[in-house]
Length: 86
Image (cartoon, rainbow, N blue to C red; front, side, top):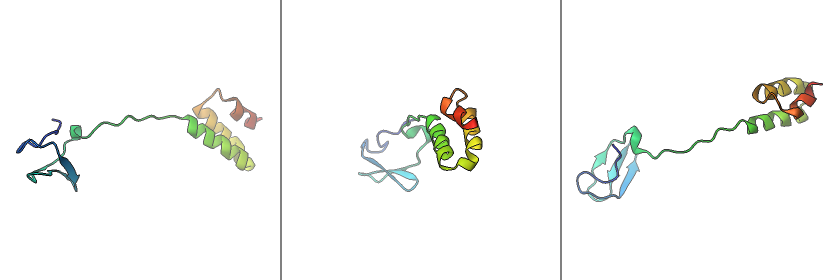
């Protein structure tokens, strides 16, 4: 059930206070359920991880083979990471 209006007075002026959703007019309190919250789009990208590992290759030459190997685990076709293994 998606809580949009107060079930007691019908107001749609609801605020989240502590662990409750409270009606601004009649002060009715509701416990929000999982589907009461708006869904957020999440974007997961591994490019940032690969870029961070390649940056570590440049900044820490002693451990560059390890960082390059980790980058290739994520993106086996990465040409820049392959350069650090040679």
